[in-house]
Length: 71
Image (cartoon, rainbow, N blue to C red; front, side, top):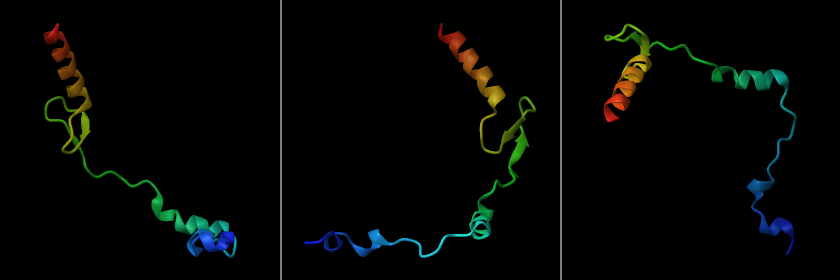
């Protein structure tokens, strides 16, 4: 048997033409960074944080207190 009989045709699929720079850039244009609209201030310390997430500043304070109480 030949190699073509063993492999399905989809594995042998290749582009017929080179994708131009502008077409490649147009396709990837919607993959850019998006603005964050869910940034709020922490009610405890006032630092900026993501909504429904723990504040990094408060988390470090809690972790430090937990480590000290563990000792």
